[in-house]
Length: 213
Image (cartoon, rainbow, N blue to C red; front, side, top):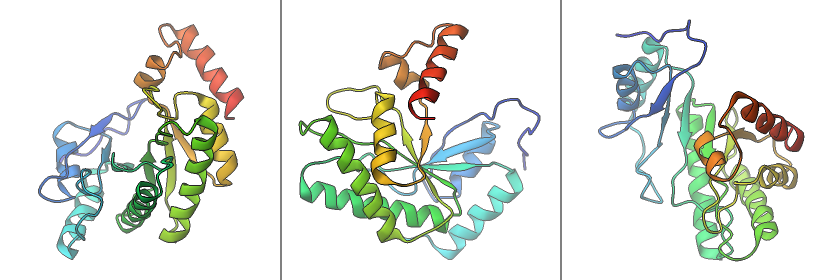
């Protein structure tokens, strides 16, 4: 059993596969000497996932404890669009996100990461407000504790929200929830935030702090 290196300045990891059982995410992380791992909580191409077996959970917790890999982060399903103006898609997305929250709580995983979603032509302002309402609805349905929702920055393709720091600020404000932010550096660079030098990164970080705090 390989223990993580706690002497690293930065925690390094990857998105690891859960194929064959949720606990494989931990063993797959060990194989690459990861300090942290990100996982899907279920088949991300399906709206609903199967329940975990008691044996699967027991093995997951044991391997996680023995490996020292922490934290584990869940990335929400790509099917979820909390900004959708289409009622049927939005309702399925809210239900699916509530399920992700419950799975995170069951697995004792402290962070659930999600893309804000796509407004599909309804406009950024309407999309931002819809994300906030959807997040609040999913949170109330799930009725869990110990899980923090992280909004991921995006590259801004099409009508996707999250490529502007102001989108994230406004989602947090409208939701009234203590949300966190995951800065995907590849995404924000593609969205136009400069990261090419140390000074560029410092300026972008300062802009982030000024807008979001």
